[in-house]
Length: 356
Image 1 (tube, rainbow, N blue to C red):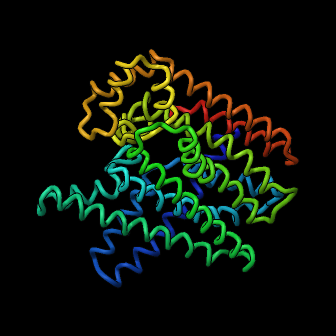
Image 2: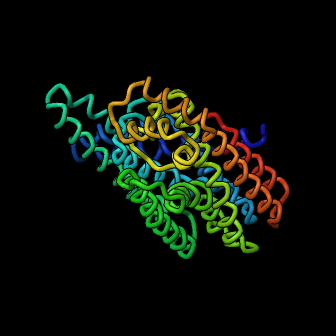
Image 3: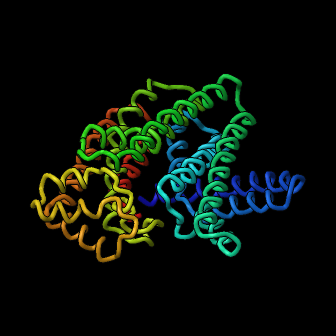
């Protein structure tokens, strides 16, 4: 695991350096327009540099290496676009979920809500703050394609990467919509839960970064397809672990409020098994709390205890491990160099054993 941690530490340092340089340039450009706009760019820079594990750029480098890529510095320039794109998605995701924290502190909405609440009513301050956050997300989306357009790569490679980002955005949008609307469905549907997990997480978090690395170097040995199958299984394991951390972890671990999935009334595999395994009265106790924004810590504790005692927590943990083992089997069959394969194996294990 030390090799993987070293690689991730190196990638994080390199990506953070590039993020600072890129946003410094945008801050200078904003100064020519207006001080308020400059402040937004400064806020965006501080926010993106404050947190994030840079897992997706790390995966992109592994995908690049698996395809035979040797110029890691050049690939890191491309991976910058991936982290900025991720920031765009996170900012908009928080607006849709009504969250004001991320990375253990205030997100863009939270920053501006606090700043505006002295001059505006609470409702107006929140609406205006969310409007600014939507703008910040859109700027990050534009920055993504700005980075790609200026890469030191052939036009064919740049076009292929842009096309890939467009497809992933389209498919992630489907997962996001299904996730947001899940609270309106009265029936817990396993097919819909799997679909959200695939399009919102597996495809976006695991498959896409690996494939971008392959695209940047050129597809080798059919790796795009191999990583698609591998990413589906590992992405499921990653999301199920995320669900468990979000429910049973701490806000210090996740950087988000504990029990946010309950407040948002999200349909997850945890809830699917809870409904199947709980006694009617216990399920009623969970159901009456789903989607309630004013949940207390005692409410969250009640739901946690029921999920543990019913066996729902254990069921999801077993499912995550099952997807992990399937991913590892697919990885073992890939024709890639031994060192990269080992790093991907360690990353796969991390996805399920991580504590945040």
